[in-house]
Image 1 (cartoon, rainbow, N blue to C red):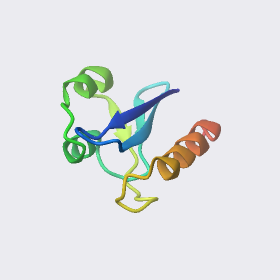
Image 2: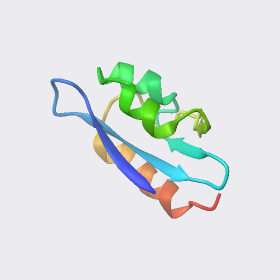
Image 3: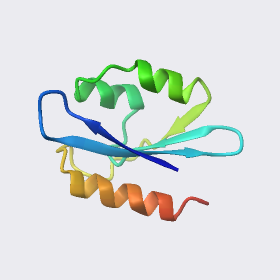
Length: 88
């Protein structure tokens, strides 16, 4: 698993996500439940790095597990739980 902190441009806030390698695809997990590119847009970050990293064969969590605020402690806890439950 690769845990990534995506910073919010011009702010001290950010958002933790995790990228999990699976047998036939890559899983992008975010507790905000958005696509990787929707979230990068909200954080004012370029999408090229994630396009290169994820490729075309990836899935992502669509269930919103936390509020839309970027409180790092919330998303970090969800990311650690997802890593712990990697085999699900």
